[in-house]
Length: 130
Image 1 (cartoon, rainbow, N blue to C red):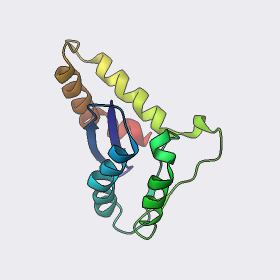
Image 2 (image 1 turned 90 degrees about the vertical axis):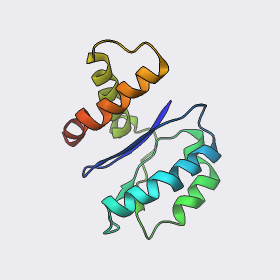
Image 3 (image 1 turned 30 degrees about the horizontal axis):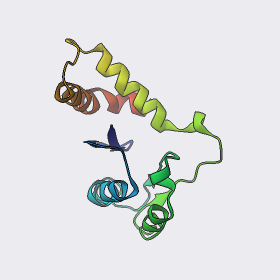
């Protein structure tokens, strides 16, 4: 599983998660990667953070953590049942498509991670903007 952070302005890190995403791992990713990314890319405080509705994302602990950073960036609140508006799914689909087009196909988990990261940084910024 991978976790990512991106913006119209820049692509952030693509993080490999060795195991399932728990609330603790999610908060660790937020504090290690999201806050610094938003501080650099959206130093004006106008960046908006979007998440999907995975259980770790919607936990009380994660929600409280994000509220504590409300002066650094905003949290985009999606209307209920609006997955068709969720750009995260489109980005993941574009990433998978870019990896599938690569040759040779990935054989090991490390090969797959390398293909994901290469595709993430090389191909997705323009696709994401469109």
